[in-house]
Length: 348
Ligand code: NAP
Ligand code: ZN
Ligand code: ZN
Image 1: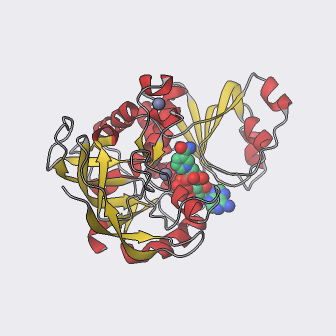
Image 2: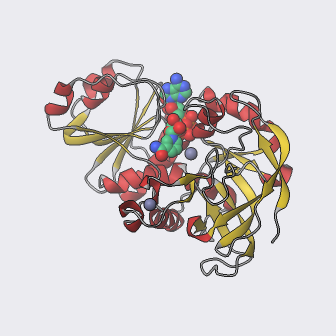
């Protein structure tokens, strides 16, 4: 396939509304897969990045790293995927394949990993452009197989929100006999509830208010508490083996650590660029840990997709036309989404 011009939505500068544009997709390299995008999820990270929350970024920026679609063409050495396959692309599109992290299938921690958008492709020096677009060309190693049991629209958010929650839940052994709290019921949070429940854990949602209680219980949470009620912290002191934090605002971390049981871990997934205040006493007492986790490797992402298919898990989504993207960003910023916007790429 030669280079091609395709439709996309891009933010021309930090904080500017996204607008329709056209971008070039590269000609197929030998290991590349060309994908007709059907759906792309709207991750809170897209909102952060377009707003320049994490530094300058590269603009114009085409966000989007929760991509699903159908293979339309393959390079001469592609063996994993065939034309017509249902596939997905997540947060990274390259890594060095040579370092210890890559050797351990943790490409997301490779110092040379390349993000799906707002990064520079080391092969041609061009900025990477994400899934708010109709087509993408990606090395087959970073293209996942979407099981038939998961519809492509509900599968899209699994490529970031799904794997970002699956990986720490698995790493910290969420399962039967374990008490897991999910802090923040949004895109990541609602999938964390479904996945932790499917792993067999006892799940509690910690949300700002009780507004989403019915949703939380329908998603599989056995308990639901409001963090705007100080009694919650007293009532749940010393309870959880794992707290999965999906909130991107500054928190009273000590207050949350106090809800951990002996040896428990609070893992940060939500990203704030403000430093955290933590009292060492909160960690010493009961040997607690404060940790972070970032997406997942390619093998683990495939494992998560297969796990979701087996357990009937897809994201709860609101499918939108591409022209609604700026409205969706505003609603994500205000926590007003149940529970993931997904762009229908046929509307570009
Ligand atoms: P989201 O859908 O907006 O959900 C975040 C949730 O945080 C909200 O639903 C809300 O839940 C809670 N929240 C608490 N304080 C809030 C406030 N002041 N305003 C809005 N919401 C507030 O976001 P997401 O897509 O799940 O992403 C969550 C975070 O994870 C983002 O920072 C994102 O960049 C990050 N992320 C990290 C990784 C990683 O690899 N570590 C991967 C993907 C995303 P309640 O209403 O229940 O309180
Ligand atoms: Zn994301
Ligand atoms: Zn590497």
